[in-house]
Amino acid sequence: MSQFDYDLITIGAGSGGVRASRMAAKYGARVAIVEELRVGGTCVLRGCVPKKLLVYGSHMLEEIHDMAGYGWTVEGVSHDWPKLIAAKDKEMDRLNGIYLKLLAGCDVLDGRGVVIDPHTVEVAGKRYTAERIVIATGGWPTLPDIPGMEHAITSNEALDLPQRPEKIVIVGSGYIAVEFAGIFNAYGVETHLVFRADKVLRGFDEDVRTTLTEEMAKKGVHLHAGVLPSKVEKTGAGFRVHLNDGSTLDVDQVMAATGRAPNTKGIGLETVGVELTATGAVRVDEYSRTNVPSIWAIGDVTDRIQLTPVALAEGMAFTETEFNNNPIMPDHDDVPAAVFSQPPVGTVGLSEHEARKTYGEVDVYVSGFRPMKYTLTENTERGMQKLIVDRATQRVVGAHMVGLDAPEIIQGIGIAVRMGATKKDFDRTIGIHPTAAEEFVTMREKRPDPEQAQAAE
Ligand code: NDP
Image 1 (cartoon, protein in one colour):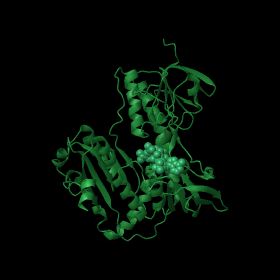
Image 2: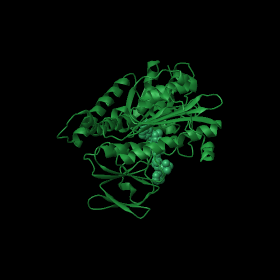
Image 3: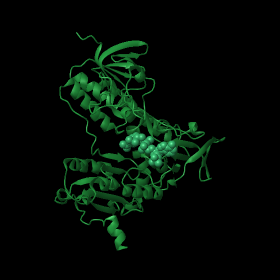
């Protein structure tokens, strides 16, 4: 018999923690998983899933407008916000139930897990020992250090608002800010996006940033680029947001979407000497192991790439390595990603800027398009597709898209990019007609290099 109560104790029952725990149990390990909120974690209960349901719902009004172009007359459209939130909550309950079922082979311990020593975790006043401990506590939204910002909601509360706001300021222009700006705007909320960059989605390919910024503005989101709130004041009816360009915005809701910090405080990591990075994330090696040999960390708490499928891959790699004698390092290269903005973004590989830095000379293919679906409508939304090719090897090193179905399309393109497909491989693939996706296999015109373009001017 083992000297420990369990082979594995996981702290945090989000996507990564649940995956690692249930797979370890499948391999015969005795597993306990600790959760202080509800089993399911950020993605399932406070992020990706409820957010995408709200995206679907919000987009429907635009579809109703588009219907006119196809001959439909729709009358008497109204929206019931509390009904939407209740339906979403019901789905959250269902998913929570599914996650609990997935954990049937594990003991689920309710409460906050605190590491006491390298093999002991305390939960609700009781101590449990394990040969291995996995920290999978995820992250939590941060608020910028601006007076009055404590009045702001974050994505946690934005998904649970009892009433639809009339007017909202969202601070930030990353994933969460642009996704929620799209949601609120499409539900008819006067939406102001306040951000310090010149365009949304800093870090993404410049053509993605430009296209999305333009399209969001066209859809009616009020973009306040290059400014920040200097103060948020509570007023009788709502809030007055003072911007550092001297203007003010009176709104009934303020939302901060300014990043998420790893949940590493108050769980005993300092007691056992687990090393953290400068940003407060758990420092791990390529097998997700911390400097304490019996403790691993996976998912957002390690701040490698804050995406659910990455946490799943890290959890899986840990379990394979430790419980199936099959050492696997999670692979963080060419991770496809999507932003469920309106229109959405799909991306894999390097931006043009990164590719030029990495490879020097690159060939760039860009195409703008108007989705066929909108040709009979008054919808002026346009999309963009882009391929970036290493000139020396002709390997496609980046693929980016803004527009209808971009996340669905880029998932497939991601396989080709990861397999090392060349531009020729793309070119000799027959397109599916008529689709937007076919553009990725029919792009023939290279965009002139920036220097050549300048010389030609
Ligand atoms: P991001 O890192 O994507 O964006 C943070 C935003 O906040 C940026 O616009 C940043 O500005 C701004 N910001 C940061 N600090 C300040 C400050 N002090 N004052 C003003 N602005 C500030 O974080 P999010 O919160 O949007 O999302 C967190 C993570 O969650 C994402 O990185 C992503 O990995 C994940 N996520 C993934 C989703 C998906 O896969 N679809 C959806 C939602 C979240 P600047 O650009 O100027 O630095």
